[in-house]
Amino acid sequence: MSRTSSDVLVIGGGIIGLVTAWRAAQRGLRVAVTDPEPGGGAARVAAGMLAAVTELHYGEETLLGLNLASAERYPAFVAELEAASGLDTGYRSCGTLAVALDTDDRAHLRELHALQRRSGLESEWLTGRECRRLEPMLAPGVRGGLRVDGDHQVDPRRLATALLTACERAGVIFHLGWADRLSVVRERASGVVLADGTRLAAGQVVLAAGSLSGRLAGVPEEVLPPVRPVKGQVLRLTVPPAYAPFLHRTVRAVVRGSHVYLVPRENGELVVGATSEELGWDTTVTAGGVYELLRDAHELVPGITELPLTETRAGLRPGSPDNAPLLGPTALPGLHLATGHYRNGVLLTPVTGDAMAAVLAGGELPEEARPFSPLRFPPPAAPAATTPAPATATTPASVPQEQPV
Ligand code: GLY
Image (cartoon, rainbow, N blue to C red; front, side):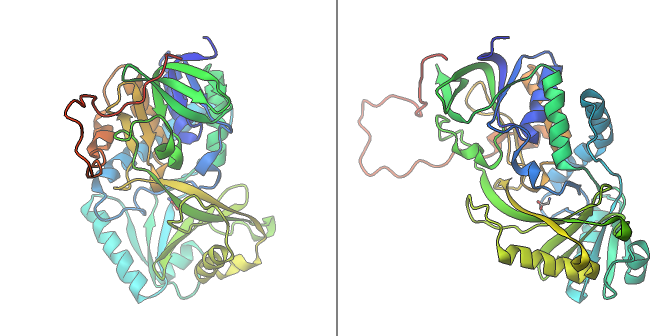
């Protein structure tokens, strides 16, 4: 294909953009991705919990269906991706233990357990002693917990690298630059202009730029996704061989209202996350963030203070008004969204790739993805006019027009 023209142009080379590109290329479409650093983004920070059951929240029952559909696909998805890329993704079906440290935590976990059971999910209530039998490094004060063997993990960095290789092998073209502006011709998305002025043309454009998706110039305001950045600080520690296995499965808790989780990898990495902060585009790692994570993790597993602290990092989750992703066509012909995955980007990678490829290949959103159409959000109300519009104004909602690229 020409380097500047494709059937599908994906804006954003994080895991969501990459899986969309890979799956679309598998359907025989000519696909390009634009990103200054493909394989980067929030997946470089994320812990990679596949926690459909332990991260269940009230009011998110519709999202649960999508999360479960994706979790179910994970084993086959990673097997296919590992075969296509020749790379390991670090997928581990290790299970998760959510524990309570005090009476309030226990009441909260009991409620979560009841909600899980009402939703038909598998989880088992354990006493504190039973929790410690499973995970001897847990603090003696643990009061009980929920064992969820179906919540697994993957290494998001390896996942991103494997997706990048699979895309390259499937013929996806990469443009290493920022998309500066969406091009719209005759009220249809037709490509992008990169920051260096390069024009890329495409039959269909997918906006998959994570928390940045709401900022692309040229996207008509009524179509701009309502996505905002939600900062998460995450720590990485290393378990020396003499201490292994430090933990056998993901361990998590709510400590004084804050979520903390410890995700042990087979290679000795122990990921501790995560803060949740509405601070705009700030990605500073703060002393307070690191302190709170270590304090809460230490209450759960006192032995972590012995481990080397090897990395501290902050990333931006793409939050949406209902905490669920925006998938599929927008009101602007030719423009699709794959963004707003918030806490569940890694978990939702397989199902997002399948849904987007189905749409891009000319079909409809699959059943499980239909509730997540971007059209569920009404366009922002126009500001009240201070002066009456001229009676002759007949132009419809403003769509910036450009020459074809
Ligand atoms: N799903 C984990 C997080 O967003 O911190």
